[in-house]
Every structure is written in C-alpha cells, then in structure tokens.
Length: 79
Image (cartoon, rainbow, N blue to C red; front, side, top):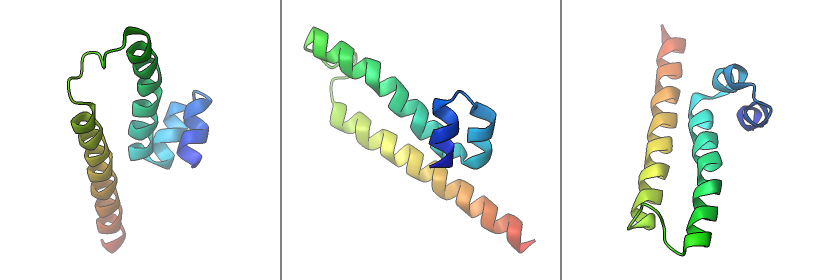
C-alpha cells in the first residue's frame, strides 16, 4: 500500500497520513523480523510463551484500529 511504501523509505509522516493502521502494521512487521531471527538463533520464542496468542492479539489490534479509523472517517464525511 501507499503507507508501506512511505514507511520503508522512512517517510513516517506521509505513511501516517495515508493510513495510521498501516503504520502500526508495518511497525509490527518490522519488529517481527529481528524477533524471528532471535527466536531462530536461540531456539525459543523469546519472551513469548504462546506465539499464536500474541499473533492473534496483534491481528485483532490492527483490525480494530483500522475499523475505528474507518468509522471516524465515515463520521467526518457525514457532518
């Protein structure tokens, strides 16, 4: 998306203007890479004991934020 394109170029303000939820998702993805490498090297999912639960929480957080922002945009167009 436009948000990810701005994010990977370090243009965080433009990324947030395009989609705030996308910035959160891109940040989570960026942080997941070193976490996966650390988990690979150590053989443990540091410091997470249940990675499935954390993954579901991350997805629900981004989806909830995206829906809330969408709802706010719709409300802004109605007024």
